[in-house]
Image (tube, rainbow, N blue to C red; front, side):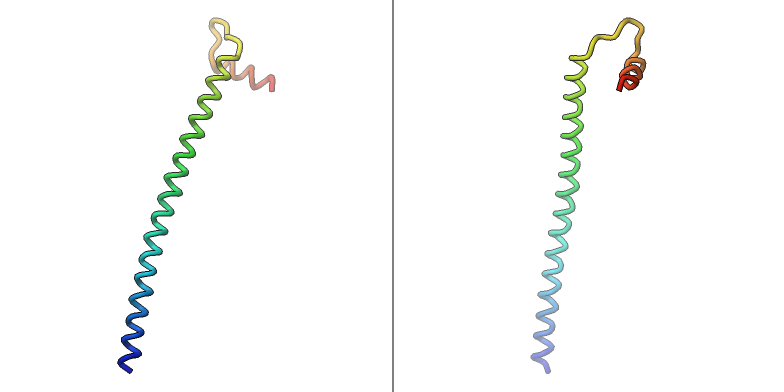
Length: 79
């Protein structure tokens, strides 16, 4: 009976160590996903900023007194 209890204790300790290791890996994975997602979001924002800048360079110049909002509205009406 004592041998069975020792074996059971050993298995429980082994199981809990494995569970703890899995929990640490899960936390690391979640942090990596979160950080990776943030990096992708930042990269996407930067990419959009570059595209916007390039588009502004190729668009015709606005006349005096025309606001950016007016220009955007006219552009939206055309599309």
